[in-house]
Image 1: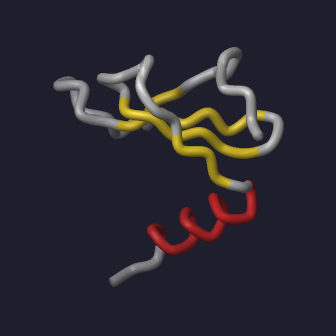
Image 2: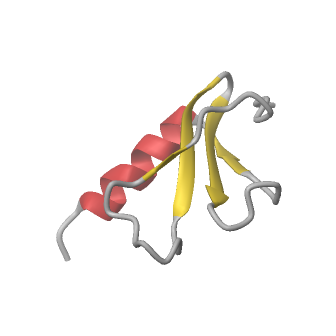
Length: 63
């Protein structure tokens, strides 16, 4: 299980000024964390590095 308490979170450079975005912590030991930027104390989804790479590959594919 990844420890998210000392995670370094970052937002996408394409995030909106309204704050409707997610944050990613990709240097966690044990996985990649994803959370809602408006709920920083809320739940965190943790993906294995392999699953995260597959996700990124899929969303980068053209329609």
